[in-house]
Length: 274
Ligand SMILES: NC(=O)CC[C@H](N)C(=O)O
Image 1 (spheres, rainbow, N blue to C red):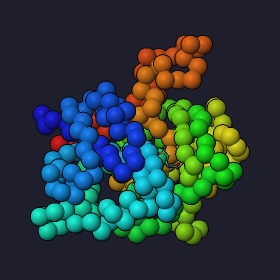
Image 2 (cartoon, protein in one colour; image 1 turned 90 degrees about the vertical axis):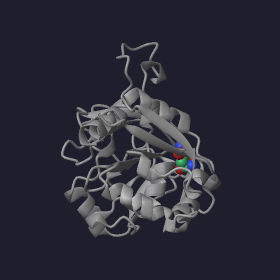
Image 3 (cartoon, rainbow, N blue to C red; image 1 turned 45 degrees about the vertical axis):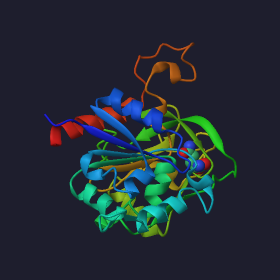
Image 4 (spheres, rainbow, N blue to C red; image 1 turned 45 degrees about the horizontal axis):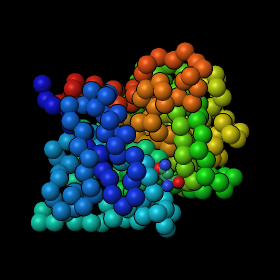
């Protein structure tokens, strides 16, 4: 069987790479390599050698110009040294090869600002949405209930019943789209796989603090039409064990944290398809 290999990008202000790599290993990946973005740009590390790309949380370029904006331009226009190709060509080939990308928080902002989500009609280079300042103008650090759409093509959320409880920590988590047709298409194709909700996962909500940022239609995470590229503001890698839960000393909880399913599903998909 192929070795399932995950790649976690770090550098320029990323700060969740260790947790993301740990979650990949715990979820079943045989290897989780943390690579600095400069290793991709120098050609020392190639996406072609991996199955699962993790773009994780942090403060890329200090959120200057807006979260992940400078890195989005870097990844869109930088050439890989000595390879005669742009890094974005490697990323496009990675997607075309049937591989997986998960963007968490700053990584979600990055994917959206590169145009890689929602990528309607399979156009991965056209930006149609953004993530901007939380509606109340303040950084939010809290736990949220996320209602899952069982009809979504996302492979990461397969098997989630009702929803998941995960932490958010961001200043720019408000999801917005360029026009009403984009939002209609996202909803019609069930790409909005996770929405901020009440604690029973009965309905999405625009109410603060359940919805921490005022995202349109309470959207917390979206995927592309293949279900292999997904981004979300909450942090699944930050809840892989029960002791990370805010009430773990008071509640009976399973050993496994609710965020691990994302990484287990990714590893399972790789093992079944490569
Ligand atoms: N935790 C994160 O990745 C935060 C993302 C970004 N720096 C923000 O504040 O919105």
